[in-house]
Image (cartoon, rainbow, N blue to C red):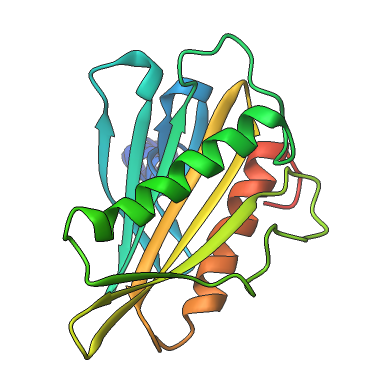
Length: 197
């Protein structure tokens, strides 16, 4: 009788193990160019979309959202065979300058009424985890009298690729800074292979 019960329970036990184990393999999004799995959810950020660009040097982007906040993570090599790790190399500075120009071009192309570069914002991250730091730029994108977006750019080199974040949300969004910091810190730890991710 006991043997029969154990045979009946065995499929349920396997099902339970599958349910428990599922998050280990189903909860990550593969950032393919650098073969790194990024969580589907980070703090309140939830993954919504992946896009692979037609030109290989442009890599891939992953989009995360929460309420009225949007975060896009890019991994690309720009056609380079080698990208220096970290945020202070000449090639990363060049990418930051190009991305900065792209933001300013939003005004030139009439997509926003005004772009304000917040020069008093921190120019780089300064966290104590083992992963790479990021160069940082902050902007206010003004559309009309009432609509102002807070926009952030983060960029670093890792795994022979440029890793870039663009984050935007309405100015004054509650807990926005903490949410941005949570994602940047998680990403830095993942890129650095830190044990406390």
